Image 1 (cartoon, helix red, strand yellow):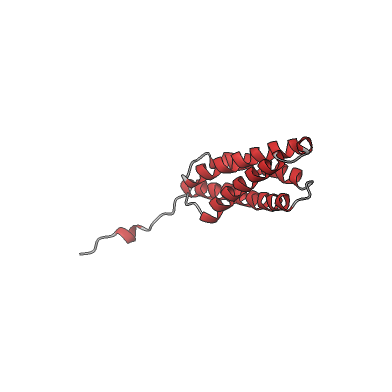
Image 2 (image 1 turned 30 degrees about the vertical axis):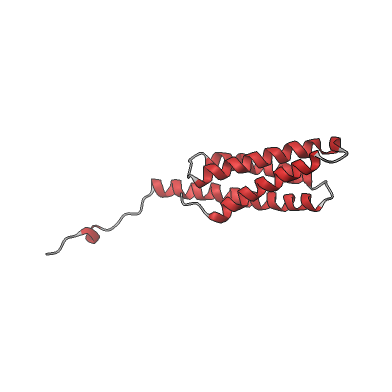
Length: 131
């Protein structure tokens, strides 16, 4: 699988933003209101970071993690949409973008599997030697 930089950048950006939001919420006065958001943001950050590493090295397991990452990003986005901060709006938007990138990873893996099962056949005349 050939990796695309924009997908990698989206995954690492989501990881960074989610981690930053968790830190910001942890430092708030009413931390109890943010517990679920903190844990989901940290989960999302870890999943996206791990997926980015698997994706960039072409691991066959990237597709499996991408499926799980979609679910975690959905939960994170839903939770942070309840917060009323600019940072939480950025995280929500980034999670949505990351979900699209995860879908692309799954689709690319599926295409790669299909190509491996049905390789293109070069005509024999291409290799004919004429003297």
